[in-house]
Length: 328
Image (cartoon, rainbow, N blue to C red):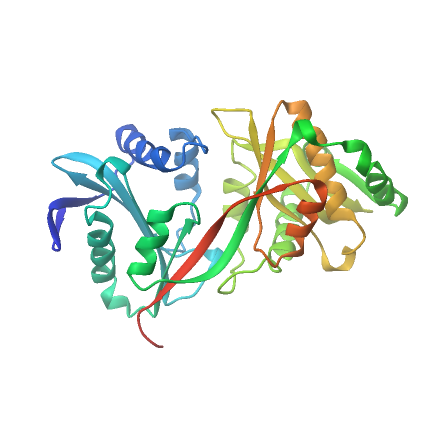
């Protein structure tokens, strides 16, 4: 454990993978994002399957021996630069606006000084005004805006889009679930992995993406307890995987499902496949018992406009920021 030089009353210690630390972490997280319930099991899964190729560190922030916040810094394959780290800090609202976030940011920058970084990235949601103000105050500038959107399932009229599903089958394509593929295609994991990589390369990012290791994808994504095998739809052209959308649950509520990825291979774009796949997902979500589907897209991504045409409604966006530290 160490004290933070700029704020001696605050102590920072590494996160310990005990139930107690996970529960303390979740208490702080849930105070900021109560609409996204999470569990110890969910968080353990991501920590257990995280690639060791990319540095990752989580701290607990204590005041008078009690956990009042947490901080994270590391690198991610989703917007990768060898000289940039991402950073986040969340302090329980009961202890907000006391300089704790500032002290932790300075602690992180000092800790990483020997890496000669050129930038630190961070993110928050645009309705989290304190977070936006914190990043602006410390020299972060916005680099990307990714609007969230909701589809209210009791307002979704699937009959308006039946022609889209027929359009896909009229092209000789089939739409099947991942459960069906896992039972019929011995290579379903590898093909799903390659399809995901082909699609994700066209997702807007601030820095290039790195291809995730197959073993990590298989354990982390395909092995996630929240992944719905019956809510993951794949478009097939013969035996080739050419499009997908996938729905994710959470362990505490059935009311909201999340679309993690939708897209098609470049060879099969502008044929209505992605839109039709989202219709399949909406039909499944209603049968599942969900009330809302949520997703997010970078605002210039054509997928965002597809969502709007399907009846998704805009929600406060996720924002990405970067603070320049130096030059290469």
